[in-house]
Image (cartoon, rainbow, N blue to C red; front, side, top):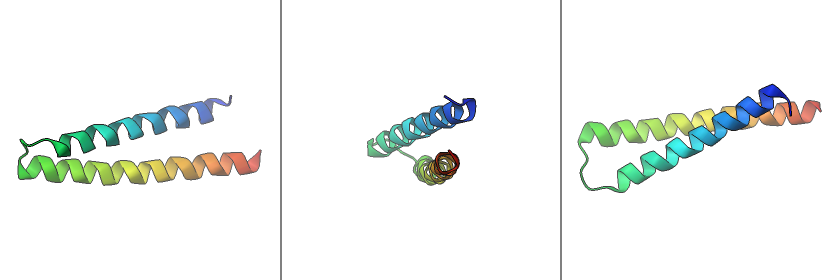
Length: 64
């Protein structure tokens, strides 16, 4: 497996894990406004990174 593909897949797994962790955090009861807002912003940023990674993987796949 190409090193770039391997790196992208590892990053994708990490972003997916982070999203789940922050979603679980938001389900909890003890949250400050700043904590809730920060978690929501992080989830949006992580989803954007996942979109970027998926596009890169698709581009590599199409070139193969």
